[in-house]
Image (spheres, helix red, strand yellow):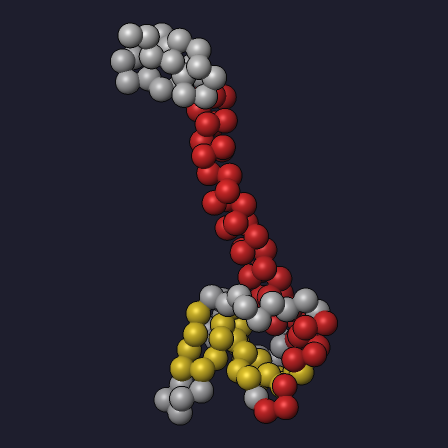
Length: 117
């Protein structure tokens, strides 16, 4: 039985374990296979980069307070962060890479930077 290319269906000639007739077909096949995952990851990474840029612009001196409204107006997405940090006192900071924020009273947030290099 003749094996065929997984992408274009052309008959394969050469090694017994060959799956594609060319590099182009191999790339096409893998790009189709990973396109949904890649698109989702790209979207999440874009949101995280935007959040990080907003926090960096609003916090040039490593610690400041800002309103939720100001963050929202700049397009900050509160649903995306990279990790949490809980202090010994029980305060939980949300971090976007090295830039963190802590909810305060009256819709304000304290912005901090950790390990800035």
